[in-house]
Length: 151
Image 1: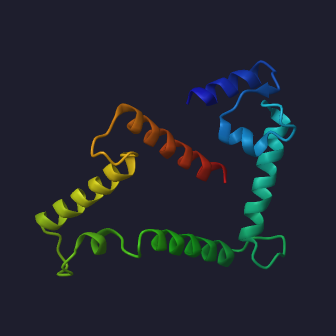
Image 2: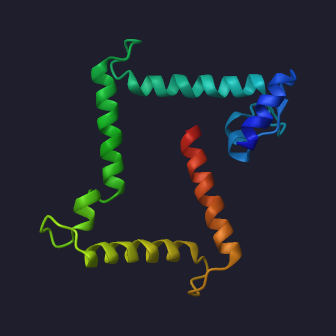
């Protein structure tokens, strides 16, 4: 939110150079000066938009049809499903396959998720989370979300 306000203020004041987050700089700072100009930002956005359009336009006719959009959506859904191990929602929680989620199944799934998350955050595997480990995990999650947004 603050970065948007800073960018909006910079643009409102007529400033054409802004300081950006590191992930944005790496992708858009074409002259490597550590600053991101409005033109660099527009160029990077334009290139990314063209790339995304090219992926959607599977027959390269310069147009994206409903079929192409649906195919792209289905492909993204399959990739998400593969990342999750193929199981979602009810299938993931209903471990005995009876069509119901018992309290035990729900509790076990939640405990497994917490344990996996704890293990991922506990960088030195000592069984204790420090403030630094929690902060680092938070930064990593934020960077991952941002990189998906700008990829």
